[in-house]
Image (cartoon, rainbow, N blue to C red; front, top):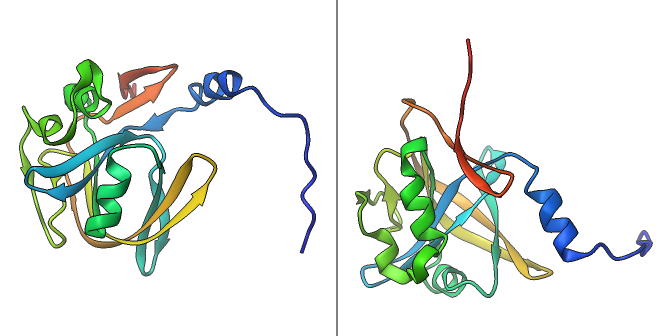
Length: 171
């Protein structure tokens, strides 16, 4: 086993400020069904494996979504388009919106697992929960992708410098 050297501790506020400078795709993670569903926004969803198809994301263990994912053994990931900023704001908890109320004002569908996926998302991943690996305040969630849908129209919603922003590509 290799020893890990411990250096000076980085201040949490400085760390968050630095992380806000990393451009990230905005995705909504959903879990549960009916009135027992909730979700949250993540900037941390990435591919883990193409064969078999797996994704990972980081979810705070104190979030209301974490126990619902664990209970149902599934989650959905909807990568948001630029016109989905209101969805991102609801799933970020702006205005104190919680649980199934976060789904209001948008159209949702299900595929294999029963997790809700956003209609019009640039990409939607329906996942079975494989594993939750606890590290610090978060769990790395590993999901086997049961189904996908894509929508290659418009712009993606990004998060940069503490704000949601549409992609802008000049030809």
